[in-house]
Structure formats: C-alpha cells, structure tokens
Amino acid sequence: MAERRVNIGWAEGLHARPASIFVRAATASGVPVTIAKPGGTPVNAASMLAVLSLGALGGEEVVLTSDAEDAEAALDRLAKLVAEGLEELPETV
Image 1 (cartoon, rainbow, N blue to C red):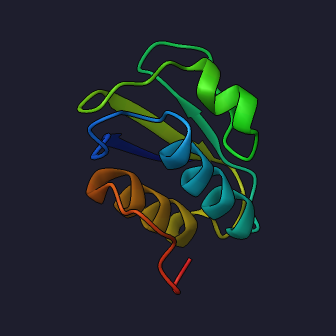
Image 2 (image 1 turned 90 degrees about the vertical axis):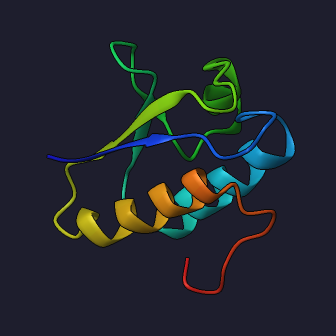
C-alpha cells in the first residue's frame, strides 16, 4: 500500500473550492485513493461529501493512501496539489 503524509497548503483547509479541486484531481488520477486525518477513518478521495466530512483545516496533516498498482505517481501528484494549495488543477493531473 502506497502512502503520502502531507500538510494542507490551502489556508481554508479542504473546504468548498479546495475540496472540489482535490476531488477532481483524485478522480482524474484513475486509481482509488483514500484520505484521512492521522489515526482517523479513511474516506474516498473522489467523494466531495466524504472529503468535506473530514473537516481538515489549513496546515493540518492528512494521509493519502492507495493500494493500486500504479498508485505511487498518482499519490505524488495529489500530495503536491494538497501541499501547495493550488487554485486550479495543473495539466499534469
């Protein structure tokens, strides 16, 4: 299982617009990905409601995981997106 731990770069955390950007990127990755707060229950990263339910704030750590065969590259891209708090999806996602 591949895993990335990353601090949220969006000041407002994974709320509304940032969550939407993240969910679209997770969906576009083509691999099943989960996201959780450390020690928390993982939720589907491609579900807007599930991501919003985390209540993840800016600067907090989240854990991205996937057991897909080609998960390493997808998790790297998603971790970079979360850490940098990008305002739109990069073309590489």
